[in-house]
Image (cartoon, rainbow, N blue to C red; front, side):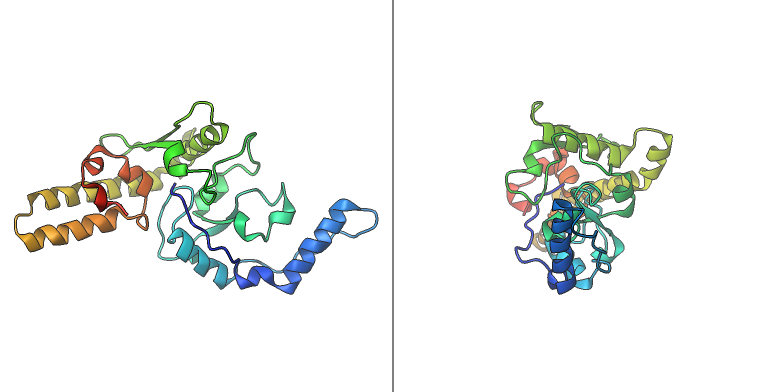
Length: 241
């Protein structure tokens, strides 16, 4: 996971009259169910302006696994706090996140006690609160809370381990393609580092550096995991944006 700066203004479609009226009616219903009827939900919130905003803020990546897509149209819209737990947050911009379909289906429907780290909250620094790691062959992603007393970090690391590796035969099969993509990126980065180190001509060195910066960018896939490997950590610090 990486920290994300979400656009302050919500997409226009989330500010429609129908949605605003629904949120108000839902609040009335929750306050007095005998007096107010349960409101009907507006049409789907999967509008293009939301997906465009996801592309800009989340770089077309799943906020949980960092799997990158051509655009956010290929992903689900996940609710950080489940809409079953808090239906009033169904259309709230700060509760909507782009997620890979498999990750979205595997994520528990209820928030664990203590909650998860929110990559859009400045106080929840997901890049430092979680330790990211890959095996020497790039096939075993691993996550651990840096602070053993940080409940949100512990819950988040547990979720990420499950989404990347599974915990039984079915979920392990369900996550095998994700691990394949991570290993593919891992090999690509190692080869790019070798190419950069071996380049002798100034122009070749420069081109190799450009490619490395692209692969290690926050906009690239699996940023946190790839930046955790030792060969990347030995690169000049300014290679990382």
